Amino acid sequence: MFLPYKPHKTALRLTKHIIILLIVAFISSSNVFAQRIKVEISKDTIYIGQRITLSFSLPVTGDALDPVVAPTDTLEMLSASHNIIKQNDKSIARFEAIFTSFIEGRHSIPSLTIIEMDSARNKERKYYTDSINFVVAAYPVDTAKIEPKDIKPILEEKFTISEIAPLLWALLGLIAVSVGVFFLIRYLKHKQPLPHSRYKKPEPKEPADVRALKALEDLKSKHLSEQGQKKSYYSEMTDILRNFLTEGFGVYAMEMTTSEIISSLQMQLSKITDEENLVRLRYILSTADLVKFAKYEPDGAIDDKCLTMSKDFIVKTKFADKEEKEDGDVQ
Image 1 (spheres, helix red, strand yellow):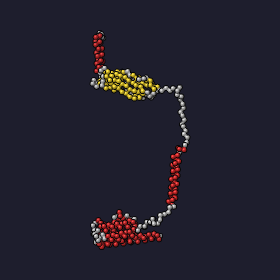
Image 2 (cartoon, helix red, strand yellow):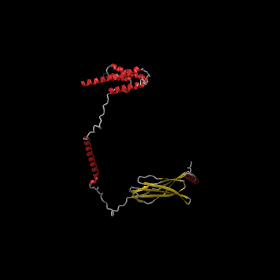
Image 3 (cartoon, helix red, strand yellow):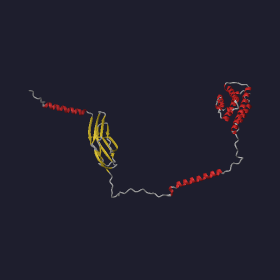
Image 4 (tube, helix red, strand yellow):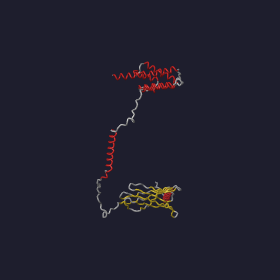
């Protein structure tokens, strides 16, 4: 029969010491410490909007201090500061924060967390403050000195003429301008015309055919063909004919080629005496194109022929246009 094992008292005592040593070693090897500190406030009751100061001091060994303030809905922190001073070879951290509140009632400044960093030893120490309560009261009203009164009604201002004076002056100015415009228009309607000596009736513009025939005579008098200026001679001649067609028949010949001009005139052949007159125009324009673009050198007889044919084209076209107008008048 086996009896149950009972550890010796010495062994129990040794085990207890080992456990204590392990706990101490664990605590000493840890680099995080926590300690609670007591805080002070400047007053425990304030009126709405007044300030209350929270402060505390603690000895530190680290090289950095980081206070953490938790925000609240009823408190407003106006400022927070801390500094470290030396006293008897010791570092003392002084922390101060200013709060205010605009809500009446009992309030609590929550616990603050202060983290001390010691970079040389790679240690971090945390301090926690106790939460502290204070009261925010409304300003008292001395009803013995101040009698509550109702809100005053809106004052009614009396009407004065000065209020509408700008409007009256603007209305009078508008009436004066209207009267002035009326008499000015009336004066201009009955104004005497200018004397005949100072008024000249514009001279009527000459018909397109008359101006074209005069231009051809001027071209003949320049003797460009005899001087060998064939290109200039035919350019001026065709420009005269193109202007005549543009002004007389609405054919924008200045911007057309020879073939485009002939095609356009064939659509209104009734304004030309006959088909022969159209053939005459084609001959003049084709010859001019050869001179201007193909360096063709016609003799003097061809130059005179083209000039004579140009005059005949204008004259016969003019007569055809007059006959068409007369027929329209008779009808």
